[in-house]
Image (cartoon, rainbow, N blue to C red; front, side, top):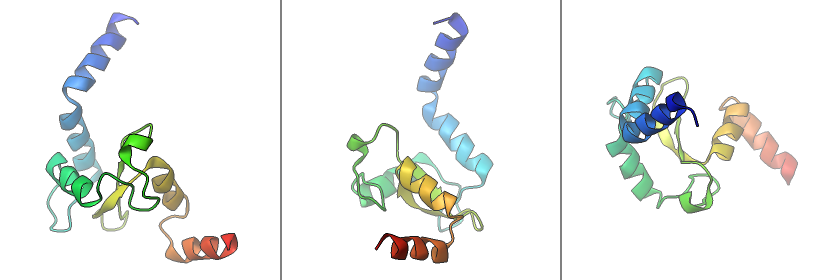
Length: 108
């Protein structure tokens, strides 16, 4: 590994929370009270969801990547924590509940 990659890796690990909070702030992600979303809010959601994806219920320990903060793209308000697969799935349906319902009907 070259020195720049090593530096970036170490920097990211040492500043992970600050970097993630900066990304959430840049994306405008807010709590239901309108507060900027921070790791303290993530921890509360994680505890409330018992460390599981809010859709498929797989636990964080079963996943290769961290749970995603799912938010409404119109309001930027957080809805919960999802695994990457579930987060991408609802994203591909453009958060359209009608499409999701039709997909569920199709699968039946």
